[in-house]
Amino acid sequence: MSELKTAATAVRENAYAPYSKFKVGAAVRAASGTIYAGCNVENVAYPEGTCAEAGAIAAMAAAGEYEITEVYVIAGSPTPVPPCGGCRQKLAEFGKGGVRVTLATTGGAEFSTTIADLLPGAFDAGHMEGA
Ligand code: THU
Image (tube, rainbow, N blue to C red; front, side, top):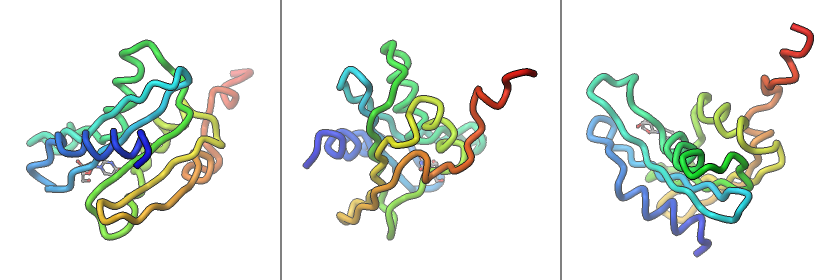
Protein backbone atom coordinates (compact mmCIF):
# COMPACT_ATOMS: atom_id res chain seq x y z
CA MET A 1 0.00 0.00 0.00
CA SER A 2 1.36 3.45 -0.87
CA GLU A 3 2.28 5.79 1.96
CA LEU A 4 -0.44 8.22 0.91
CA LYS A 5 -3.08 5.50 0.83
CA THR A 6 -1.97 4.25 4.23
CA ALA A 7 -2.21 7.75 5.72
CA ALA A 8 -5.61 8.50 4.16
CA THR A 9 -7.02 5.12 5.19
CA ALA A 10 -5.81 5.52 8.77
CA VAL A 11 -7.06 9.08 9.28
CA ARG A 12 -10.46 8.15 7.83
CA GLU A 13 -11.01 6.07 10.97
CA ASN A 14 -10.97 9.32 12.96
CA ALA A 15 -13.59 11.07 10.83
CA TYR A 16 -16.36 12.68 12.85
CA ALA A 17 -19.41 12.00 10.71
CA PRO A 18 -22.38 11.31 13.01
CA TYR A 19 -24.84 13.00 10.63
CA SER A 20 -23.92 11.68 7.18
CA LYS A 21 -22.24 8.49 8.51
CA PHE A 22 -19.93 9.02 5.52
CA LYS A 23 -16.31 8.90 6.67
CA VAL A 24 -13.67 10.39 4.38
CA GLY A 25 -9.88 10.39 4.68
CA ALA A 26 -7.51 12.54 2.66
CA ALA A 27 -3.73 12.72 2.50
CA VAL A 28 -1.57 15.21 0.63
CA ARG A 29 2.14 14.96 -0.02
CA ALA A 30 3.88 18.33 0.22
CA ALA A 31 6.97 19.50 -1.65
CA SER A 32 9.24 18.37 1.21
CA GLY A 33 7.87 14.84 0.84
CA THR A 34 6.04 14.98 4.14
CA ILE A 35 2.49 13.63 4.17
CA TYR A 36 -0.35 15.49 5.87
CA ALA A 37 -3.70 13.85 6.57
CA GLY A 38 -7.20 15.03 7.37
CA CYS A 39 -10.70 13.65 7.89
CA ASN A 40 -14.14 15.18 7.62
CA VAL A 41 -15.41 16.82 10.80
CA GLU A 42 -19.16 17.43 10.81
CA ASN A 43 -21.25 19.76 12.95
CA VAL A 44 -24.85 19.78 14.11
CA ALA A 45 -25.06 23.08 12.22
CA TYR A 46 -24.48 21.21 8.97
CA PRO A 47 -22.78 23.95 6.89
CA GLU A 48 -20.09 24.25 9.56
CA GLY A 49 -18.74 20.79 8.80
CA THR A 50 -15.39 20.50 7.05
CA CYS A 51 -14.22 18.05 4.39
CA ALA A 52 -11.29 15.67 4.71
CA GLU A 53 -9.36 17.50 1.99
CA ALA A 54 -9.71 20.79 3.87
CA GLY A 55 -8.35 19.12 7.01
CA ALA A 56 -5.32 17.73 5.21
CA ILE A 57 -4.60 21.11 3.62
CA ALA A 58 -4.95 22.86 6.98
CA ALA A 59 -2.47 20.42 8.56
CA MET A 60 -0.02 21.09 5.73
CA ALA A 61 -0.28 24.86 6.10
CA ALA A 62 -0.02 24.59 9.88
CA ALA A 63 3.34 22.87 9.35
CA GLY A 64 4.48 25.74 7.15
CA GLU A 65 4.13 24.00 3.78
CA TYR A 66 2.13 25.35 0.86
CA GLU A 67 2.87 23.14 -2.15
CA ILE A 68 0.95 19.91 -2.82
CA THR A 69 2.59 17.31 -5.06
CA GLU A 70 0.17 14.36 -4.69
CA VAL A 71 -3.30 13.70 -3.25
CA TYR A 72 -5.22 10.61 -2.11
CA VAL A 73 -8.87 10.60 -0.98
CA ILE A 74 -10.73 7.54 0.29
CA ALA A 75 -14.31 6.88 1.39
CA GLY A 76 -16.70 4.01 1.83
CA SER A 77 -18.55 4.94 -1.35
CA PRO A 78 -19.65 2.57 -4.13
CA THR A 79 -17.43 4.43 -6.60
CA PRO A 80 -14.29 6.55 -5.96
CA VAL A 81 -15.39 9.66 -4.08
CA PRO A 82 -15.31 12.89 -6.10
CA PRO A 83 -14.14 15.95 -4.10
CA CYS A 84 -16.79 18.67 -3.71
CA GLY A 85 -16.47 21.89 -5.66
CA GLY A 86 -15.01 23.81 -2.73
CA CYS A 87 -12.33 21.18 -2.17
CA ARG A 88 -11.38 21.26 -5.85
CA GLN A 89 -10.74 24.99 -5.50
CA LYS A 90 -8.77 24.40 -2.28
CA LEU A 91 -6.59 21.77 -3.96
CA ALA A 92 -6.02 24.12 -6.92
CA GLU A 93 -4.77 26.80 -4.53
CA PHE A 94 -1.83 24.65 -3.43
CA GLY A 95 -1.19 22.22 -6.29
CA LYS A 96 -0.27 22.65 -9.95
CA GLY A 97 -2.75 21.38 -12.54
CA GLY A 98 -0.76 18.26 -13.27
CA VAL A 99 -0.73 17.07 -9.66
CA ARG A 100 -2.00 13.48 -9.43
CA VAL A 101 -5.19 12.95 -7.40
CA THR A 102 -6.19 9.39 -6.59
CA LEU A 103 -9.81 8.88 -5.56
CA ALA A 104 -10.54 5.59 -3.85
CA THR A 105 -13.13 3.37 -2.22
CA THR A 106 -12.52 1.31 0.88
CA GLY A 107 -13.44 -1.64 -1.35
CA GLY A 108 -10.25 -1.22 -3.35
CA ALA A 109 -11.37 0.72 -6.44
CA GLU A 110 -9.19 3.64 -7.51
CA PHE A 111 -9.63 6.42 -10.05
CA SER A 112 -6.63 8.51 -10.99
CA THR A 113 -7.10 12.12 -12.11
CA THR A 114 -5.41 15.52 -11.81
CA ILE A 115 -6.21 18.83 -10.18
CA ALA A 116 -6.69 20.41 -13.62
CA ASP A 117 -9.14 17.72 -14.68
CA LEU A 118 -11.08 18.15 -11.45
CA LEU A 119 -11.31 21.92 -11.90
CA PRO A 120 -11.07 22.97 -15.54
CA GLY A 121 -10.96 26.70 -16.16
CA ALA A 122 -9.98 27.39 -12.55
CA PHE A 123 -10.07 30.95 -11.26
CA ASP A 124 -6.57 31.94 -10.18
CA ALA A 125 -4.60 35.03 -9.21
CA GLY A 126 -3.78 35.76 -12.87
CA HIS A 127 -7.43 36.64 -13.46
CA MET A 128 -7.10 39.59 -11.08
CA GLU A 129 -4.19 41.19 -12.95
CA GLY A 130 -4.92 44.73 -14.07
CA ALA A 131 -7.83 45.07 -11.66
N1 THU B 1 -16.84 14.85 2.19
C1 THU B 1 -15.48 14.98 2.27
O1 THU B 1 -14.92 15.09 3.37
N2 THU B 1 -14.76 14.96 1.13
C2 THU B 1 -15.27 14.72 -0.11
O2 THU B 1 -14.52 14.67 -1.08
C3 THU B 1 -16.72 14.53 -0.28
C4 THU B 1 -17.55 14.77 0.93
C5 THU B 1 -17.61 14.80 3.43
C6 THU B 1 -18.36 16.04 3.81
C7 THU B 1 -19.44 15.46 4.73
O3 THU B 1 -18.91 15.34 6.04
C8 THU B 1 -19.68 14.07 4.17
O4 THU B 1 -18.57 13.77 3.36
C9 THU B 1 -20.97 13.95 3.37
O5 THU B 1 -21.03 14.93 2.40
